[in-house]
Amino acid sequence: MDRRNMLFRAAAAMGAAFAASRAEAATESPAQDKLQDKLRVVYHLSDLDKVPFVIGNIQNHLDGVGGPDHVTIALVIHGPALRAFQTAQANPDLSQHVGKLSKAGVGFAACGNTMKSQKITLTDLLPGFVAADKGGVVRIAELQAQGYLYLRP
Image 1 (tube, one colour):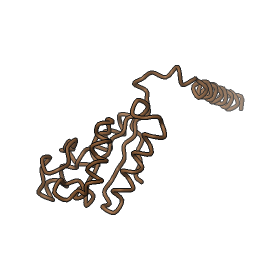
Image 2 (cartoon, rainbow, N blue to C red; image 1 turned 45 degrees about the horizontal axis):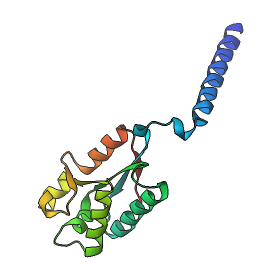
Image 3 (spheres, rainbow, N blue to C red; image 1 turned 90 degrees about the vertical axis):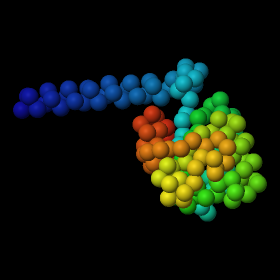
Image 4 (cartoon, rainbow, N blue to C red; image 1 turned 180 degrees about the horizontal axis):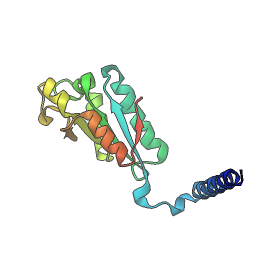
């Protein structure tokens, strides 16, 4: 019986110590954050009808945090949504927004599998795109492993 009580007390003490360390970390001031610790977010887009909505979300995100100095944003596109970013099919407003976001540091990645299935190359896409040769979902998983937060509007 004493062994169980000792084990329970030890586990409770470790839990309390962990909780205290998390509380301390949560109260650190933003001034203590390093520049490389800025928020990193990956947006996932595959639905053609959501293209304007997602582009608007990204712009709102940048505006809401005070610009690209405060967040790193990547957009990974696959499936039907990639059609909207083909130079020949992109509407002028979308082209302008993509150019503006690209200049602000937003990374645009096109799924290599989708590019093959749609028979397009990087030169067919708006400027600023890179190919996610292993696939869009693989690229998203890689970014998440690097600490990016995942958003699928």
